[in-house]
Length: 500
Image (cartoon, rainbow, N blue to C red):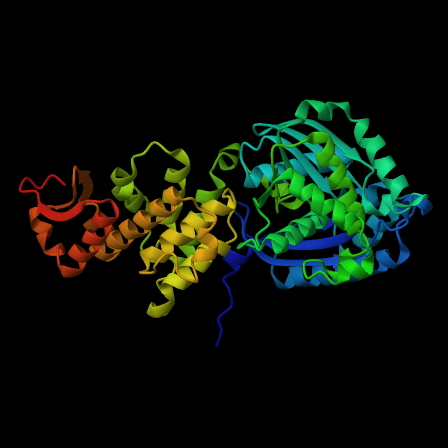
């Protein structure tokens, strides 16, 4: 018999329904926190904003499809015991003359209160979504929806200029004169935003389903080893070339591309035109895609200032460790391994802490496959605040922690994201984690009474006299392996003063 989840746990869940111009999406989150996990995610392409520019009204077929699926969403939320549901409607509903009628129908049929947000608020929440996954982001957020384009300037994490522009695919499709006329309209609209000139040369953060599709196309073209949108980084010229190519394609050509869903074939070329033009005007240093947008920004906006200040990567890893780990002594392991990596590199030190938090996530797997599972989990976990090379470093370190080797057919593709220095660091870190877990058996009180330091050509593992029994053949062998990675000799010593 499968026991039901405790009601107390269910009660923490909250949901956001995003009613956009092209799609509606329900996302249920496990809780309100710095690194909430999605426990359910469903999107329906309704096309509410189709023909809005011409008729001034929501598309009739889209309204029916949206209402039917919002009713389904409502029943699902009841079954999941979700206590808080926030419904946010954007460009199509706020601009259509029958938008208020649609809101009333949702209330009558589904008993859901719809908040219709204006363009400035939509831009702000999209930017907060980017910041929730990339604190300190510096550059321009561009959120391409079906009916509008939101642009926000971010000055090292602070929101500056914000605007909502009528540059959604559904609007562009209504322009007479073909794609040349559309490009001219996009150019005039963007050229009218003179504030963009001050943001040239910084990072562009694209948000939105259509632009994420362009990222997937680029990943496929490059054979990129990680199909993860968050923090996928690409050179502006390369992305502009992809966008320009897609902008010239028809539906039949796009339908043959594996990365393009059937429902995107109609609108994707127009979204590509906008991105190509935006890159031309911003001349960004680089382009970093964000999988987080309005929904995540809304949750981030609900947090206390203290929670907002938390590191999203370490918060997520700590939460995963609580769910999947056994011992809960990751902070001790981080302190224990610290003296080996005192290099003054804040980025690596942060990744090392994340690796310590995740160092017990594969304990329940079959022993022969723990290294493989740990590596794949690190590569694919739903974590943010980390770039793709950082994921590759975590994956390599955790593979070694579970006895895996680097450079084989399994690990080589993701290792290509690391330079030689990072590969060496990942190998050393994995060996240090392996030694820590072997030495202590997961018992924090044992590990905290030992010390590991580099002393010239030696790597010393020091034990107090009453814990001398912790030394043994396996411990010595794993100490030797770690010492060898540092070009040193491993030695176990007993401190007669018992000061460890």
